[in-house]
Image (cartoon, rainbow, N blue to C red; front, side, top):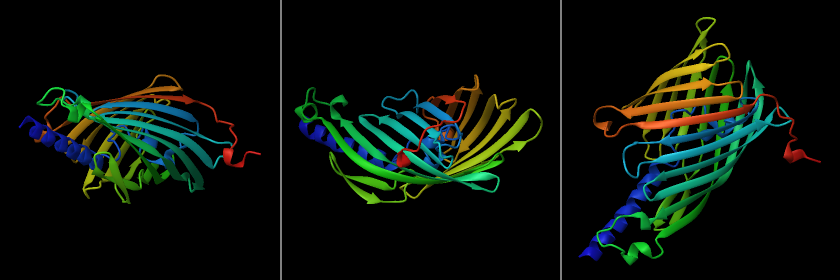
Length: 309
């Protein structure tokens, strides 16, 4: 009987992993405005300096096996002011399931009106890892879970995006991953072209005084299950030099939150965000995000490697 129960657990584990893969081809972020490369390759070079950011998200903080996401992004404009490159690395974990991806990014930027239109492309690979040995089974040391219990799969992918920005407003449209992989067996996946996880976002920057600016914004995310998730943000920026930014947001999944970014000096910024569900969604102590961004505050004189002679 215990053998039969363990088989049921095994199948349930694979189903949960498949559901997670379908629901989270791209991790969820509250601080997407400060970490734009994580959702749009066209963000590369938009800060006009060499910029590096590290973000760590602890979702559903007090729940065992809850999602945890670590993201590193770096980008900079090249010697040709129209081009920029970047690197994105993401480690996303929930329960026994871990997805680690590394992507190279290229953006081409065009002056348009008072701002710039950036077109971005990214390509890379995800490694999916499922460690069944970390499961608690009804029968201790069950060979079904201890023998060959680690599954690894490599899945290549590409993404595209567009981003327009100026001193007054910004807007972006992106599909970070054009290929969606459907699990067919324990460690096998079938790739299919799909418009999943489409991000559409935009915002305004309004000056209300010499020391304060308002930054309302919104993000729509169209998922693989054909549902739309909406974020509404309202931030206040305090001058001089945009030293402090604080804001609140509401997500259509009945989640509210708050965030803050502090510019320690011209090179270092620290950000924090907290969110928590409302009503029936309030089943945990909330989610935390910590962001650290470092920038070299001068233009990079690197040569475009595509035209190096």
